[in-house]
Image: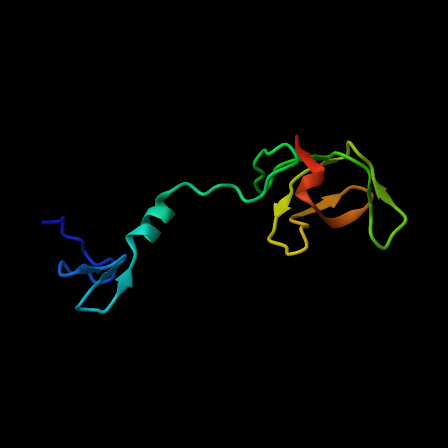
Length: 116
């Protein structure tokens, strides 16, 4: 017989398996053991720099090439160091929010930076 699985919601020992779901007859809670295994696995960094290094909030990065600032005549020069970045989910690919000295707040694409 298989090991008894307890319901994570009500802690009942009467849970049963139906295909890939576990079901509790007492509280009607359903859960998947595959989902539990996925949450236990370490999360991979979703934002990586041009060389594949994982980026996290608060990192410092270096701009790898000259970038034109949209709506302005100024340029972010290659080699500019940007400190204290913030990662964000963006549909347009600009997944780094930062503040650059002399230019101000702006968003960058991670493919144009490398970790400092």
